[in-house]
Length: 147
Image (cartoon, rainbow, N blue to C red; front, side):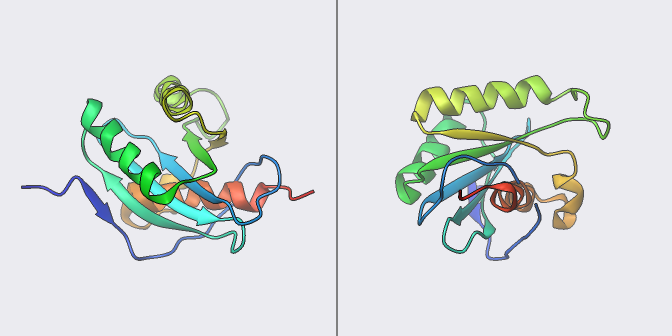
């Protein structure tokens, strides 16, 4: 039986977008994909993201796995990567990423930031979605303004 949520031990760095001051808040980042969702975690103290999980399931099982992670980590906010072409134009997945972001907002009622994820999968080791999520979340931390 395949494991639906696998944790990752490696750390990843790279750049991201912002909301109000971070303090010690836990933040979860998501790399949406049609086959799986990568998840990363970070906090406002270290301002570093690391891969957390791969969710291989679809539909309501996927949402149940995300709900389990949110319950376990109790994030103050969420970050979602939005796919775009290198020139910034919408990608085939752009609307699906936006829909996923809206569903996260609606289901979990947490502040959510969207991040341009043009190169996150390229920057991730072996194209792993959890590492791509860490790149997305790290970009958000790097671009977040504490003022």
